[in-house]
Amino acid sequence: MFNEFWGLGFALFNFVLLLIMYKFFGKTGLFAWVAISTVLANIQVTKTIEIIGLTATLGNSLYASTFLATDILNEKYGKKEAKKAVWLGFSSLLIMVLVMQFGIKFIPADSDFAQSSLETIFGLIPQIAIGSMIAYLASQHLDVIIFEALRKIFPKDSQFWIRNNGSTLLSQLLDTLIFTSIAFWGVFPFDVWLQIFFSTYVLKFIVSILDTPFGYLAKMITPIDEK
Picture 1: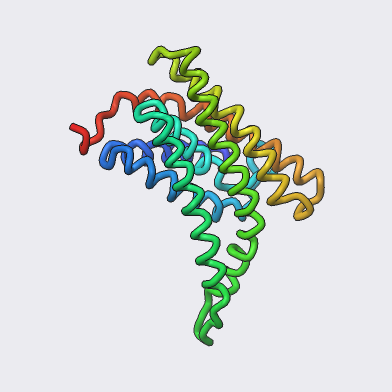
Picture 2: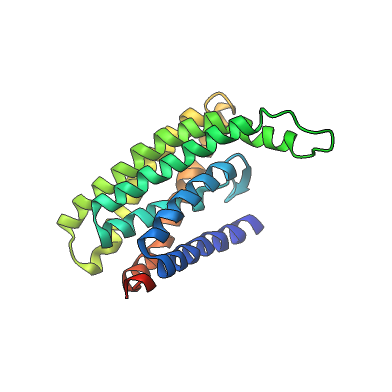
């Protein structure tokens, strides 16, 4: 049960860090969080773990936190700012992929010990990143669109949980399908791929439910630079 408890703690830790970034840096902190989390999640996803009895990839809770960040931006600053964050995350991931592909091509010194590890991680990154970038753009834009549509139907502050969970759960289903199909189809046997798809969405589902109280806390926060 170590992975389950550690994963729960890690998810909550991510949300706390997100709120700290928002408190001290306002919407700029949310933009930074989207960029950082998108990059780190795509590094973590190269690691597979066993959790809730299934094979899953790491990085799900970190990646899912980007949806909370864009929902907060949409809620407090509008659709335009949320879309800006989506493109910032995409650009950050693209830059990371390009820069690291150049980096691993350098011939290492005799004393180097990192090259093989970097090749293992970032050698997988292009296929993973292509899947992630396509899934990211499709799902994040869908998230923004659904959130905005739900806000017209459920406009009250107390109904934020409907807007947040409704948009995130639907958009992350699309994200999981696109990402796992491109990144892992043919890499793992079908039964393992199916487990990864199912477990990835289940984990994102759980994280999306967990992030709701943090969304309400964010609505109550007045960033330092906006006082």
